Image (tube, rainbow, N blue to C red; front, top):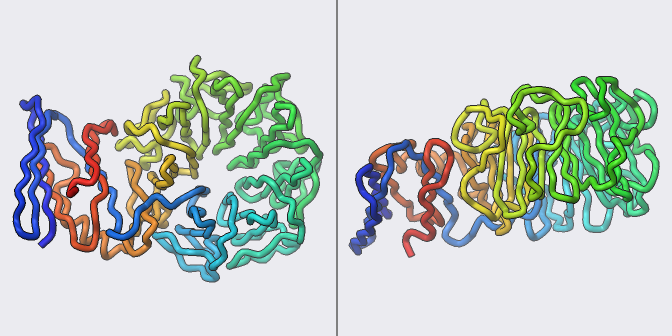
Length: 457
């Protein structure tokens, strides 16, 4: 017999009572709370021998994800129709699978149905769709496993657009390859290239956009843009696309840039948040749906730390570790438990340990400081990595133990959690094969109201 949890919700109690009944092989706990709203249960389930704090970095695409664990092994899940997972097949996976057996992966970036990665020895690798030469190996043939790009071992930073790649070497030179219809490679042409071509020097960081727009920061802190400018996402005050780098105004304190569907987010070194381009879903977070052709400061706060622009939504982390989201939310990509768009930043949950965030077209991922990886939003191809293809309106954890997330096991687990959502009583039965590390209960606005750690301890 397993362990049962009965969680009672009353709207007339102002206190919390714990009842512990120590019975053979089972334990009952009754929690009484004040509530007048619907509740959503978030269970963080792990195996009894493993925890879910093993992830170091994640990259989120439209339909697949790639992640590196603390041991520098490479893992992937989601759509695999062009071999973008890199496991040698074209079979989708709705839970993480290890790619190869090497443990020297350092950083990753994924585009539309292809993947790019750098190893700790400074070499560059790519796999997946290659119809525009986006793998950079001199061919237009897709690859089902990682292939090395050239023989150089001095690659420092990488970034991907929808169908093109960018990389900076340790000497500050920028290189680009792949699709170039909108001039997003920045080499003053519109011709594709299936090998890396050099785009100037003295570059510090590079950010490929989802719709053919490119942004880069130089060592002097200036911001440069090129490529598609259909909605003013280059921030130059017009809608004219360009095929070579142009500097945005005279500011020299840019810190980070992220290109979304047709909008751009940016951070300055003073902690201010800026946005431009398309805003019709409120993805700026400025309270409007008005497009801007030049950078506009969002609010007056100076404590923004990390940003990521998705298809039509945006995620941001503040210096206090809290997570904020704005824009489109039709598939739960904001992660607040609803499908309602937001034109202003809304806090997601109550945690203050968020470290990095990654947005896809209609899905999102985030890592916390403990190394736990969460995903939410569109999950049609298993991009949430939890063993199902059901969309998620709240962040769910991606366990390290792949055996935990097999679909049949999850169906059995979910059948022992009912009803969810609830407004009165929620019943949970814990299986012998799994340990519930934490129980969180959120109201219908996505705010955390209960957080119980190690309930059986």
